Length: 191
Image 1 (cartoon, rainbow, N blue to C red):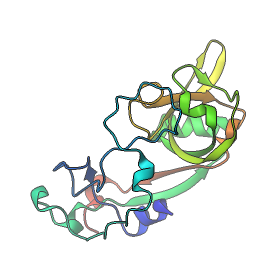
Image 2 (image 1 turned 180 degrees about the horizontal axis):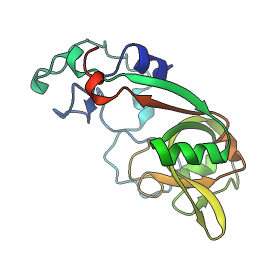
Image 3 (image 1 turned 45 degrees about the horizontal axis):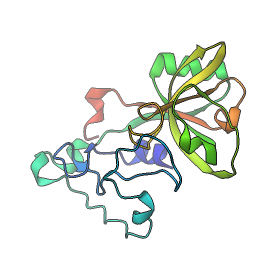
């Protein structure tokens, strides 16, 4: 589990593909996550992510890129604690006190065409479970919702974000909520 890895082994900083940001920039370029038939506002120019499905995972060398100028072990950040949260009010309290939480929900075929508003399943088959980041909550047209950051680029949905019903465990979104706290900054570098 990535959260436990963060706690026990630490994680180094990263950056966008082909950038000199962070210790280990992404190994692959941004790709298009959408299914065939997607009718969103894609800007094009990106290969479909499926093209990378059978690409061998790059070896994880435990060294920062030369251009970064920091030693790998000195760039590590560690988690202090990792925990699960249950219930709408506890999720809100965690968001308010510590910031975003990680969640998983069920994606159905119509979700790929989401553009704005509060997502509610209309039609289409179950596709897969998907990890996302809940960053806030609100009420739109009398409907309580979570504000969620997706990982499908800013050309999908509402500039990479979406809203989904809250308080009902809609599409399983409130069933697995994980959060964590980093070690205090002065202790976070090489321990």
